[in-house]
Image 1 (tube, rainbow, N blue to C red):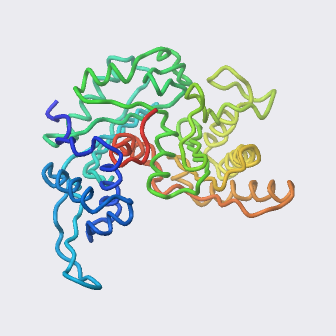
Image 2: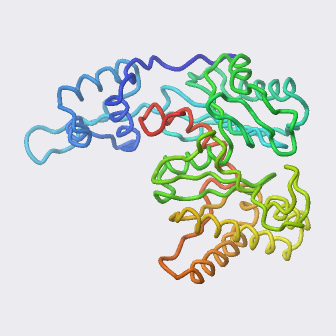
Image 3: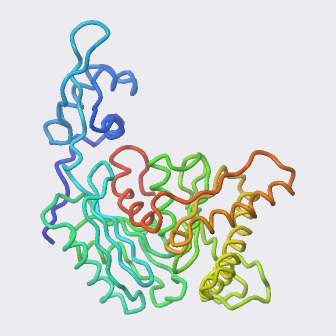
Length: 364
């Protein structure tokens, strides 16, 4: 690999430094003064000066001019050097490999897409992933690679379980195998969790929301009270395999009548009527989540939704609103398309690397 493992991040070895760095990130190009940093973090001005001094030494922050003060001399403002280091997001879908390179602000610097056969075997998939990442990165400073992949899987150990439709991946240590190939730190999570994490960190979702991803499969990412919920065994969000029709079509997971199988069959018809049916079925599943978890919003994403955004948002919303009304009313639950469309999973994968740097969320 041409990439190296990050900039010198000694200044980030603490919660306080992460808080300061996150405020620099959110301030953007206008920057933020040391006094404002002290006020918003609760740190002393001396502590802020020490932290920002280290950030400047490491090339992560720079002075961005002066701002008029309400009293006394003008304040010097600092801004994040977004290009000081980068993160890679990698989405291993069942039929496509999507990679992005982002700077520290989360902005996409470069992106690539390539066909992929997830059933081709570990060696072929890992070789394809390593090639795409190498082509994407060039000589940039890279902190690590976040990998989004269909579940189920063990996020903590980076081990895949029986990926729906591809049982041969069961027990494969994807994180460690890919890290060895790339020579970079690797974090692995379900694509739906990665997408939901990215939405939460960018403030695109309410405190508690469900992200529903309809593409080659169907899954959910759950954010509850501002935190990504993975479950005790990191298996939460297998939304597509709730059985809603006992004698329904057989699903690749082995059950009958899974919402995923019904949705995908309806989409495969290629007709407006089929798409409307898929939206209705997805809406029933979304309404189940709203009733079960009392969440604040439903966000929709994935390539199928992105291709028919208005139809799916309208169809899912219709079912959710009707269910809420039947169950006693209450405030309307918003249903909307996730802003990243079919790229939300790969963007979220990059955020899995960036988030711990800013004290926002750490892989657990």
